[in-house]
Image 1 (cartoon, rainbow, N blue to C red):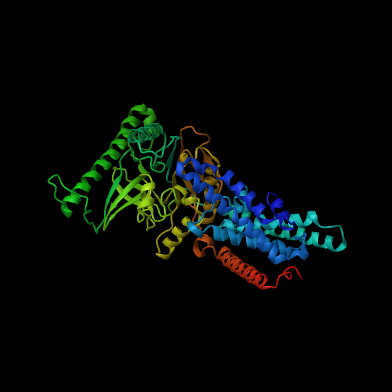
Image 2 (cartoon, rainbow, N blue to C red):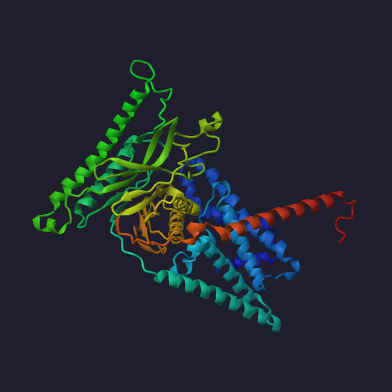
Length: 549
C-alpha cells in the first residue's frame, strides 16, 4: 500500500519538482548511514540521494505522457496498471546497471518476509516481485477511486479479478517451489559476528586488537563445540590485523621501488624469496590459531565427553577477509577472501569484483594528481576479474565481499560465468562484510533484505558473516534461518541444505527486466526528443502566439 500515495500524484497537477524533492528526502533518510563511513562520504551521500530521487520523477513523467491528461484520474484500467508496473521495473533495471548500479530498496524488497510471494525471483529476479507490488497497488487504487457508475463497477471488477489472478499465479508457483525436496547439507560452518567499530584513519594497534578479539572468539567457539566445525568464516578485512596476503603471479615483475639492502634493485629471484617469506609468516599465524583451537579443545572435555565429539583434535578450515597485494606485471591492491585449509595454508583467494564507488574506488583516482592527493590511504583498490569457488568439506563455496550481495546481478553473473565455462555451480554463497561503517543504520537491514532476494534468485543459501552487520543464515527460499540480533558478539553454526536447482534467472539472466529497461530507455529518449522539438517550435513562434491552441 505504500506506493498508493505516489500513484495518486500521477493523476494530480503536482509539479514534478516537488516529487523530486520528496523522493530525495526519502533517499537521504534511507541511506543516511552512508555518511558515517568517512567525512568525504557526506557529499556523495547527498549526490546519490539526489540522483536516486530522479527515478520516481521520470516514472511519473512517463506515465503522464503515456496516459494523457484526458484519462485522469487515471489507473482506472488494467492496461494502465500494467504500464505503471512495466515502467517501474524498467527504471529499476536502469538503476541497477547505470554508474556501477545500486539494488537496495527495490519495490520487491518490501515482500522479503513473505516467502510464498518472492519465489518468482528465481525466474524474474527481484524485478518480478517489484512488478507484483506496483501492479497490485495500481489496481487497488483503481478500485478505490473509481466513481460509482455502471461502467466503473465493471472496471472495478476487472481490476479485482486481475489482482486475484496475479496473486493466485504467484502464490501457486511459490507454494510449488517451497514444497520441492532439498538434500540436507553435511558441511558445518561457524559464522563469526562482532561489533568492532572501524575508523577511516589507519591504526595498526586497533586493527591488531580487533584481530585478536576475533581470534579469541573463534578459538573459544571451536574448542567448546560438541560438533566438528568444517570451516570458520571471518568478516571482511577482520583477519588482517596489520597483515596482508602477498600473491605471487606467474608473470611476476620486480617493481621499481623494490630495493635491496645494498641499494640495488632486487632481482626476480630475490623478489620471489622476499614474497615467499611474507607468505610463510602469514601462514604461520594461521597455523598458530588452528593449533590453539586444538589445544584448547582437548583440555575442555573429559574422556567421556571427548568420545561424543567426532574428532576433538580436528582443525577447521577458514574463510577470511583480508587485504591482498598481487605481484604480477604490476602490483595490484585488492580486497580479498582467502581460503585457508586445515594445515594453515592459503589454498586459494578471491579478489572483490564489484567495488564501492567513492568508498573503494574513485574515478580517475590514479591518473589525476589533485584527486589522488585528496583521497586518504586505502582507497583506489583494483577490481578482481575472476570468479572463484572454494572446496570446503563436501561443499563448494562461492565467496562474496561487502556489497556484492547488495548488487543483485553480481552473484547472478558469477554463477552464469561458472555455467558458461562448464564448472560446477556452488552449493552455498558465503558473504563476508563489514557494515560497522554504517553505524547500525537502516543500511544494514537493506543489505540483509537484498541478500534474501539474491538467495531466492540464485537458489542458493547465503551465509553472511558480518562485523557490525547482518550475520545471518539464509536458506535458498530467502528465509532467515537464524541471525545475530543487536551489536553483541556471537556465532552461528550453519549446516545449509544442498539445493540442486539452477534457476532460470541464473541460466538466462534478467530477460524480462532487460526488455522493459531498454524499452523504458527508448521512451525516455522519445519524450525528451518531443520536448526538445516543442521548445524549438515555441522559440520560433511569433510573439504573442505561443499560448494559442
